[in-house]
Image 1 (cartoon, rainbow, N blue to C red):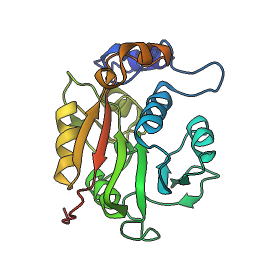
Image 2: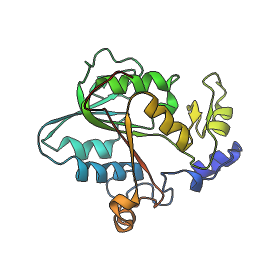
Image 3: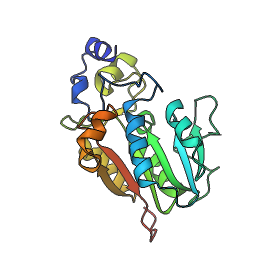
Image 4: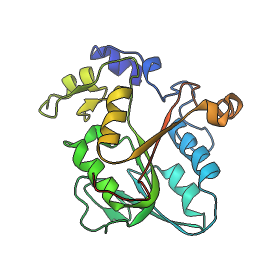
Length: 225
């Protein structure tokens, strides 16, 4: 379905050109998780061990991942979004006065930045609400061999499909631009891939072998970006 829609709008890349997308095994037939959900769960299970309470906020949450994280007694887990019904907190990620500085130890920001008019303001806010030493997941659609394209003034839905791969997207990142923008706002950045988890784990969980997880960290010695 997505591939046909992209082709109809003359999108210049194929589904196989996206960095973290297994369109052949996208949804789990049992729990309904996406391949991205499963990648995040792999990371959280391995690197967020239950060694004390962590304050976690998940922007634009998915039902499957939320269900798996809410049952962990070591996570004070909250969901947040501007438009999605049923979240714990209604927030605009570019301006979150209801969250104090350093309010969270971990965040998940998955496929949000491509939707907002100013991704820099969103990254500034994510940095602000993260405690020193805290970490987060920042993910967007990425075409690693493509070119970065951005224009928040485009309002035609068909043109957005053609350029940004979805009718409500405002930009399409390449790897270099995404990494650069993350670092510009003070974060340390680490990439996690199949070399970390192994091919067998990726295959077992239906994660494409070329998938890359972008993990950010706020320096322990905080200096404002």
